[in-house]
Image 1 (cartoon, rainbow, N blue to C red):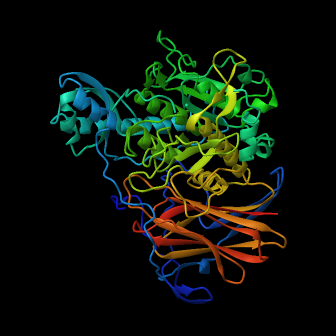
Image 2 (cartoon, helix red, strand yellow):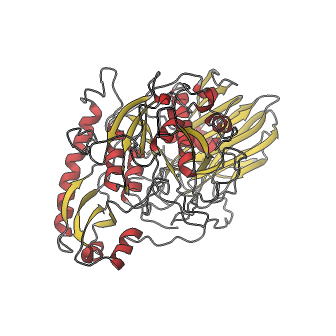
Image 3 (cartoon, rainbow, N blue to C red):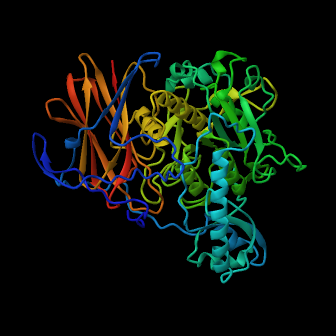
Length: 624
């Protein structure tokens, strides 16, 4: 499962060298550590510290008190050369074509002289920075923010780089550029079908795909499939009741019928934008074709209803959050417009959306334009949640951007009854990663675009994705109360909310999500080196039960995979559980039933870290 090394990661030296088995350690001091948390932060954005444990109670109403912070003891970070053979649980890595499946089909069926509009993605040569937050004196409506200044600087760098790449590309074909992007190193233009394969021969090119490949959005009289039933399944209402409603969620979908009663009084729709006909900022209302409403697919209205619909039609239909939503329309009547999707991602980042919801099932690999833009959006500070798509049940049917490394791919189970949604796309990804990452309920009743009070059953992984994205937004806001800011920390909690312990599979991933309540949570961020153990002590009181632990770490599509594991050690020094996958970028495990009181250890182990170091986010929870 080898990929090219990521030049941005640096090797670690560690404070303590230890050869260890449980109950027997020897220590040798080595030079002080030089950590790299993997985040490019030239603008001084507040980030979570390394090796610090945060802790808070999750009372039944999750208003529990913050218990403070403590440092992981230096002696608890050590090298352990103990080695045990691990089975390859994910199969073999598959090659990735530079040409998307749709474009390959066109090459075989269209006339060679026919011109087509495509997107060319070049090799990444710019590191995406963590972008500045909205300042207390700034207003996104006025458009003059430090974030926009940073984006403009990134745009200028992209333009210079892309100009050079286009010069080199000219040797391979007559590609005529018409547009470009800054979140991803990609340009839009036209070329004859017969020249596409020659373009792919350029060393500058990573991926080629059509702007419009025809991909559709990923899509009863039943009292057990209302939105309230879905909320009950993911246990989100206690978090909703906290009233943490800032800042914004961004929905990448077919538009929204914003006049629907579920979005008015109170009004939960902030911006309505058309990224197909609205120019680079998705808001060129002078274009006669500009229309951000859900005019064609009756899809985005349902997504929005589950994300943030109010209770005017009854509490049973209320959405998971009351957070204002930005709608970024990225579909035409014929299907997905990939250029519009990337423009929507860019616009959502610029608008300070904290969670981007990808109601997309693009036919591209994890190196495709949308997947790469989604990964880069994570680097900029976004939590990205997307559908796995509806092309299952066979293996390797997960679609983009759910296939991406830094995106939470969402699978589905039935709101009524909990049965698996059979057509859910499945992993593994081409590099053997598990997909979906998590699952959420689908086939529940919510808003429809047919009139201002209409309802419909929203199906497929599209119906599951809003639940997961809304839970991620609620989790992010809950964590921020306690001084935790990194988007990666929310990913770890989303894995923690899953109900599947190792070993995982490509049907459920880390499992159906249930947000943590009625207990106590600990969390943090560490940097893990090869064969390094990090032992995190947590104090478990008398009468507690059900210890769950999760890891998540951000890898790029071009780096070598880092294999990180988690082990749960009880107060007597006995390992009680572990998350031990060789191919995943998450781990989840747990000890069910009554817990021995005392100091437990959450051991994070760098089983095989060929890049030298890997930032890892962890979270654990104990029930009262």
